[in-house]
Length: 405
Image 1 (cartoon, rainbow, N blue to C red):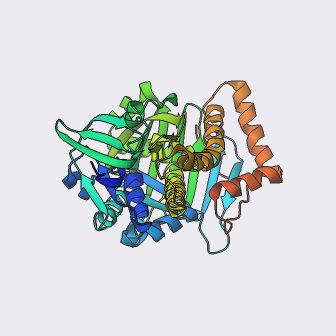
Image 2 (tube, one colour):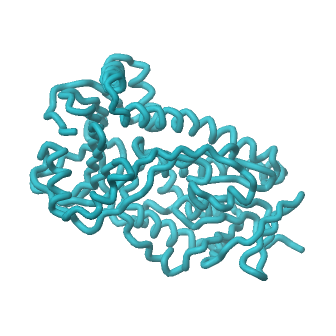
Image 3 (cartoon, rainbow, N blue to C red):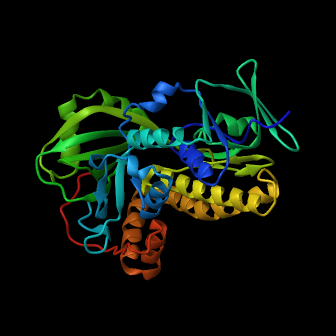
């Protein structure tokens, strides 16, 4: 029986849709398999999340035609970043060059819609929405995917892009390292009375972490990380009391705040797959690497993986090889693991240190910030982490308003 298409992608989230666009650009036919209905994918609901994008990630989105579909009003610029530790007067800073930016912030829902609209206009992309995978049979030359009770799809390669708790990854027998931080992140948007400054703030308090991300039109995105057993109380708090609490922890830097819309809660779980590939199978996005959001690299790494997988498959095909062979896919795995594993481990170590409120950890936190201010190799590591040579990292400690923990 002939194959239905060359590649099947399970999961029509931002990474799955971006991958479909990338593979279409390379001349591959793809079928997206998604359990959600087409209407939901076409008009994704707001989920409160703002996605931080590096310059490299924007380059990938632009090349795929997604960036051009975004409304300019939805794109906010980050011109600098500040990290505060507890009630310390010092702060660690990361600066962009003159008239430059460190990156951009875009609502997750806007990225999803842009990706859907772009992918579905591609002639070689087919969407099977409202679909549930019942079985996967990996053969020597193809993968047979059972959809529902009586439909099936035969492909050369199956890509799992269905999230960090990927059911497809489990069906393929690929394990994963899972770290549950026991914390919940609450995200929302707030209006503020004083002018903003385009700076992203990360305030590691004792018992609670607050990130304030700059948005357009006198708004910020607030990201509150707290022990999961305390999250429900924050969600049930009176909206203005909640906003006042955020403004107070932020030392009233932007004056009083007012909650815009609802608050959304997400459990913090990091995931790293034991392997990214198997014969005729590959993992992409959070199915491969699900990051803690503190370094804002999750979707960026997903896009880098899209770029890497597209190049791997095109090179295999152009060289007369089999795109589903383990030999070809291993090149993608080696490169993507090299790009993601150090960041994953470093992020988890950073989170572990800066959420530990015991006295020895508090001393270590201050020491780490001091070292980052004084050691050029650490400053260079920050630059490399941004993956953009135009960005200049200038971590340093200066006197600033104290942030309440």
